[in-house]
Length: 459
Image (cartoon, rainbow, N blue to C red; front, side, top):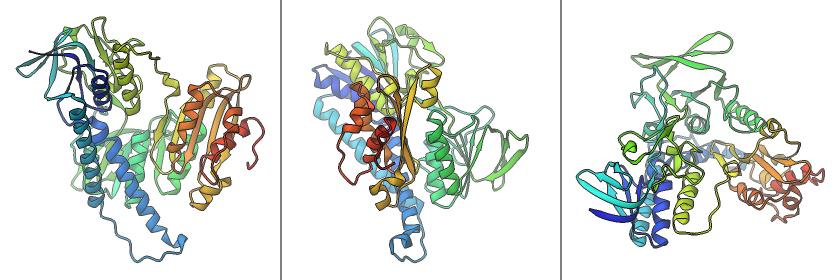
């Protein structure tokens, strides 16, 4: 029986980062993964999807080349080449994780892990004993009752990310980040796209203004968006499927499609883990953890999507580092989930952190709001990418930054100084005092903060 200080079940962003950090801190560490190192994010999610999105952005730029005085002939796009490039990116990163394991002395075991006691894991016939265990098994797409996933015409992101052709007519069930990202890609490659969202607006967890702006932008691109609508049935035909949609006007729509993408959320990967043997409980289908991410009182922890706390790769990574550094006796601080940055990589991008204006009002907070549009930003105009804005939500009495909400070109890269401000309990006055290089998109962050104080210069 092999014995370790720490055993990690799952080699996704949370698991592999926790393993590497634990080894750096001197713990003997093993990471057990039944599929590929890097998990969903590196192999079938975050990374390959961003590669496909970049291809789509390049395609859209080529289509509008005349704007820049560049004349092209007929433009043809081979989606299979985009897919091939995305898989090369994936391969490079997963090899990098394996290399980091080797460099730091992390043992990698391939197989299905099952807890057979509070400190014992079975992997086939082998047994692994560990002082502490971290469960980082992630999650998978939530199915829609009554709609069969066949992996070809009706798919989740897991199948869609590997398909080498773009659809002609696509219906996307779910208007969250995954839905709008794939909608953008499919639209760029010429598909007719319909996004169906059951709630009143797409990207429903984002600020109302941002959600409305994104919906307008996608509709301008030709994407149909049906909110407060539900898919009742997906009827198979000789040519694909017909999607039956119930709308708020009581008019049932029938849309033919050759691809249906289901993206309505996730369910935790907790089956066949032997959780009962380790005294680990579930809550709403996810592993129940306390503020320190302990799943029991005997050295078992859980991180990432399997906890249901906040299903984002960077959250899983932060949780992994927090747990292992705590185990190593380092000074750590609980994760402020409200302040965690969020990103949607459609075009325009959406980025946010903290409270929205609506959430602040629901909490009874008195706030002031500052907004600055990229239309007045020199770098955005120079790049012909002036769609969108930066919006900050500030406590009226203290000036403390409560939230920030951005939509526009590459705005996910602008969250850093806002997240740092929140971490340091900074104010809109302090953000406004930052001297940004000119011309940069980051100037819009400064101007939005100044706007909250009634001091915007260019807005």
